[in-house]
Length: 485
Image (tube, rainbow, N blue to C red):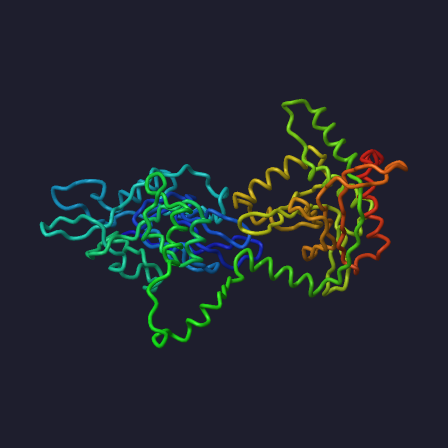
């Protein structure tokens, strides 16, 4: 008799309390191995593949794609152990669906061990066993000849292992795998890879299962969803004014409501808390960055044609680490309950990165121990992960100071909101040619505006001004950094 084990959505760390189901990686009736990823979820901080700590056969999935689940809510159930029969394809019709569930469980056990658990809740942890070759127990329905074949709705399955019915629409009993007799097709995976396409469809009320994808093998693309949105928005035959509901008036106003949840909700809460708790002030200065650009060109030329290039952001980050070494008051936070300023010895440098999911702040750990080349490599790695949506929660939290290069948006200056609970943020505007007095002569130089927003509780204007002036001096004369080497 197979034992049904329930796997709940694990704590993904950093105080996250919920996650959105982006894509199921397994189906009901499919064999899974220990630590095999079974679902891709999106938290407020990152996209995460969640591995299953059990080896066996999936008997139920809880939560549709696009649905939010709370940490600790049932995610799926797995039948582990042997001795549980599964429906075949009928006498005289042996095939992949024939045999018993014990064989499928045993097959999963070959890679992960049926009935074994890893205790792992995040990808990269646990036993590290190779994934099993997947074998799917196909849903069955009765045919007139007594054979069983074909898809059937999951609604025919009852509760599993004491799990309340109504939780998962895709469920089977461990003794009968998928005994179904309906007339509707099984709700299989939707041929969509991009989570952005799923979000676009969800926000516009497009049912993906009704679309025919134009991509390879029927893959649903963004263009397919946009066509469906356009078709739905096409003007239909208007009823008489007397027949129109009262709600039509408000719809005609063009009001659009966007839920503050997920990443957008976290950013909103954090920014509101920052403005509510931190008495911030901003100072700024224009700086001639001509020599900084020349120094970067020289550094990249010295490395040779095959050496990785050092980014401008990496040079600015190196200037930040040097400035914070001279003014450690700004690498701090305020403990409001203890009424204490906490100065931090280690510098974890955050940098603002704009992605399709919104603004995120990846973190370079121990930035004070890195040179410009190391900073450039780490910044490039984190930026790539941010755009791909694969940053881990640990790579998005714990920063002690933030560098914000908003010049990439074509703006000169800003008064950024401090990334709570940090004490300061340095902003860098675009670098543009401007008239500038250089060595007593009017010349065209590459000028940028530097701004520092700081928590006035941790320091006064003298410290903030000294920090910003030192950064400007390094930008104007990069040789100033040599004094600290």
